[in-house]
Length: 501
Ligand code: NAP
Image 1 (tube, rainbow, N blue to C red):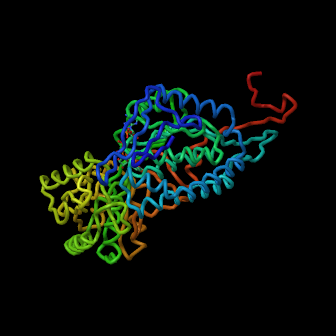
Image 2 (cartoon, rainbow, N blue to C red):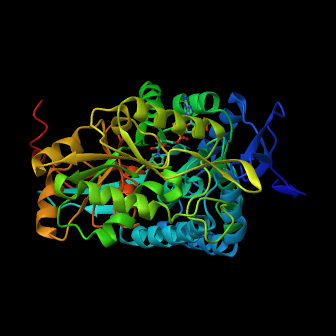
């Protein structure tokens, strides 16, 4: 049961439409990164609890209680789910602010966007080719049926807890699958709340389960158990590789949304009044803890120092502080470990010979001295082969690299193991489109950053992932295809393919 006593929030596991303690009564603490204090106690699923959730999801799927409902019926329940989410925006947003450090501005928009995502998915459900009739050939009738895959396990990260779970839950449910979600241990709260709301909306018991717990322990079962048909993962490339290997033993379908080190190219004619705040938004939004953050900036020689100067001046205007305050632009990073890792990368940058032009320090916020705040940080004179240009830092750190020809800029932009996003800042959109053709990334922005649409696919090239979330593409990721051939030929001699006789 979610239970808020004084300040401590309590959540159990959510299995078969009910709150359940872990079988060994283990719990773990969730901390508020804004002040380092414990805010919640959550049941910690064991391997046995995870198997129980999988078995429940399998039973629910096989019973047809959800999987065999018509898509219109599923759409009606999902629409109800969206409406219940809209009535609970305040509670859901607070759970994410308290556990992930998201600013008020960001956290309050996420539940509303989750509800919009459901509406969009229901619309797509009605347009989707669930059954496709192929042109008749002779006396053969052929159809393509798109059916749910079965039991999906989803493993999600801490940076955008609600949305990254919903990007999997919504299409999985829309297409008739059952799902078990393992949220990140830092931020399980909003996902647990969503499962409860789904039950209230009429999603049948066992169809949407949540098992918080250790990545290694719960994750191991979710990626290897034979009753799981598909694994949907968002997280680091390192763990993604592990998951892909584990899932291969039982040939599970896998979608992976992984890390990034996204480059933005600034052309000499860029409108810097827009580009400068856009670049800062690109790497500082959510304190830089966004997979598609624009963390490598390739700037033409002719405007290099001007861009650095203006970036530093504009960075000064970002308010770092309490995420609950409406005028805060950057809240804390998720944990002491993450803060130390970012500060470690800043040291690496200095040792590699990059020039620190802004930031680089921990910020101590009055009244929240134990929180994990850090300045926006800008490095100049970065070479693309430095670690701060190649490794995902997952904090508000920008590596600014100089280029003199477009070919050189494109080559450096592509010289990364990642390919999640990229961008071009220029007034010349024709040139921009030519550059976009050369960029190996799943999303490319021209004169913008971070803007997403639910009807456009999202995912990575190269080691940034496999498969797509959002758009129509995602519906295919949660269905499998059955070809149904019917012969209407009554006579054997009308079946020339029987060549053995
Ligand atoms: P992470 O360390 O890879 O963890 C992600 C999830 O995997 C967590 O739930 C974690 O559980 C679980 N996990 C850990 N070890 C596991 C194992 N051996 N087997 C199965 N699951 C395991 O990533 P993170 O630090 O939470 O998130 C940051 C990363 O996510 C960044 O690399 C970022 O780029 C990426 N990301 C990508 C996208 C995208 O759409 N491409 C979006 C957001 C974030 P615990 O929390 O219990 O350890």
